[in-house]
Length: 195
Image (cartoon, rainbow, N blue to C red; front, side, top):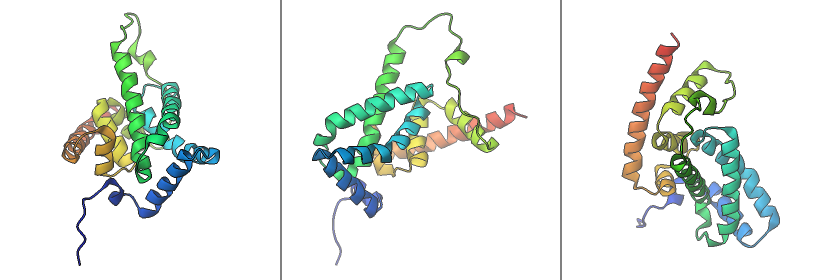
């Protein structure tokens, strides 16, 4: 006997993780203080790393992460499907990052600022390949960097990425295709510059 149902986001998350997320969300919605501690302990680093890839410095990423947690505390009661907690959290993180980027682009530019002084200092990676990958990612436009980060580094499914950034799965696939192509080109350029 076949079971007809529409695929959902939770079809792509391991069942145990979806159940843990759902239980954690319910505990938070009930106001259990320890649940919020567990939530932050579990998701703070992944959210910070995601925001760090989209920001110009560690300080910006830290500020945005704090804003994410404020929004989570204020909005967790409205989360309808606890199993979607992961996508919901990254959706909030994305909105915080996009708000920050919009604000930065709207602000008047200082004429005497050197662009190299603005870029945040990245920690020295141990591996040359990792350093080249980071340089290649940093050179990508935000849209492509974001989709690569969510899909590969945060390990979200195509459906989860689509949910987080608010586009159809087909758009995620085309953005991933373009992002991989651009990253390959950037990595070739980075390796050429170091020769």
